[in-house]
Amino acid sequence: MKGFKIKKSMESFKKFIEFRIKNKPGEIDPKIRELCENNSRAWFHFHDKEKRPCLIIKLKYLKHEVTGIDNMAKYALWLIEKGRRVVLKKLGSS
Image 1 (cartoon, rainbow, N blue to C red):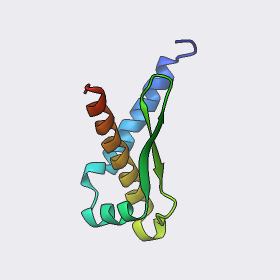
Image 2 (cartoon, one colour):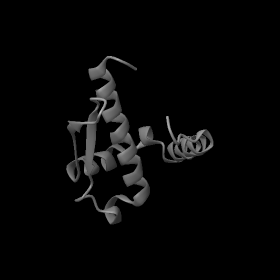
Image 3 (cartoon, one colour):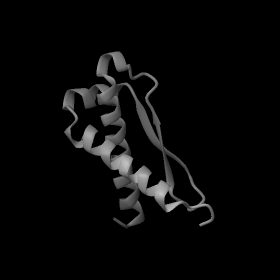
Image 4 (cartoon, helix red, strand yellow):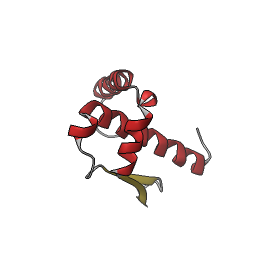
């Protein structure tokens, strides 16, 4: 790929792993997750150039004053991972 920088990609991946370890989306409080689910929306919409479904996440009605920024980050990451599992199941890969 033109313009692909391995060092920059590795740094981004390292930051993602550190973020995931810090936020632990699998350990989100069920009460917070329910509150988030009732005040946000997520759906698949259109496809990218490689025919993969695109996940749209709308946290418009989710108030960080109620849930806290850390819990919003955990929920968003949990939701993205849930969407990823759905896509992989549809595509038949892991």
